[in-house]
Length: 193
Image (cartoon, rainbow, N blue to C red; front, side, top):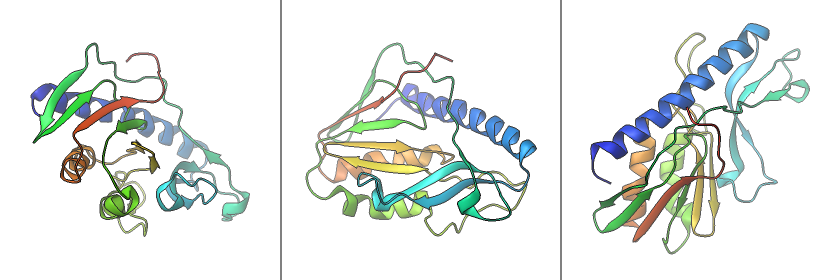
């Protein structure tokens, strides 16, 4: 996808979400200093989640036991609104950006084959399932996605605190796998920013 408009929209969508997440986490840690943010879990009951992996926004600490903890997820109250779709190309792939909520990115595609296998290296890097990039207390978030849902002809990604490179590295991956058209949108509508 070419053009500064698309680049700016992606950067703005990430910034808006991360600002809300940081404020949410600051509030949660003030109430529960022993809690944890961006906690990797497995949700094997959801067959659409890649590997069953899902990062929880915040988990409270109850005597150090996860089974007694409470999961608290951010529900963003604002999202970036795009007045008109942005269209461009990535090589021979047409890309249409209709809406972008950083924690709710749906990418409609026409890539044939096993998407889980195709996306496994991308996912391992950006999700960091072994939590190798876990920050020390008081440090910035690790820059990881929170989930990757794989559906027939669609991906749904919560990009969490991942940098914009996580988004942009996915486009050529899909292009090189044979996508002729990518449509990017959000699955939910929130009030505009």
